Length: 181
Image (cartoon, rainbow, N blue to C red; front, side, top):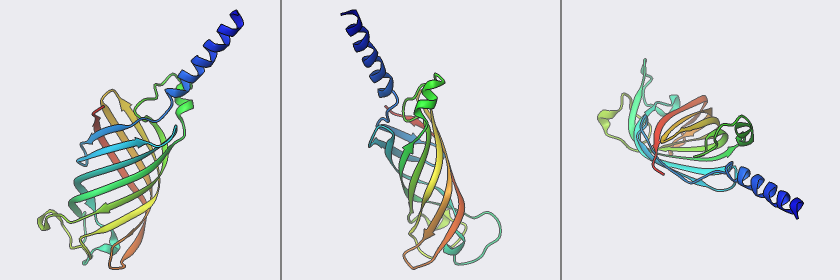
């Protein structure tokens, strides 16, 4: 009987340990690039993150009408969708680091849509008021209580509905936000 209790306790302990390494549904407000973001758990190590906001972006070389020198900026609405796979939950648990609110390193496929914005909120003229970017990315996300930090980097293919397109080798994303749940 004693062995049975130890066996059951061990199984329950292992299950509870693995369940803490699972992804969670998280609602966030991002501050650096203002947006509301919802990260939906789709599996024990996968999520689908969707953000809707109005923020800054830079020009893509083949999507501008004039080749201006210097830093080019754009403030416009955007939709950012990422399918993420978190690959280091077990390693973080082994180091006694809490794995909560999808805090870990990830690989993702990212789709970014940038839409229209006020004419005066841009330092360049675009080939279209709508453009898209898609590509793989590597990132890390950390949760410190209610504060969420995110960094990702990866190559993208960008294009507009008029057929203009190009490739950007390293597209960065940096965000600081607040977890609402």
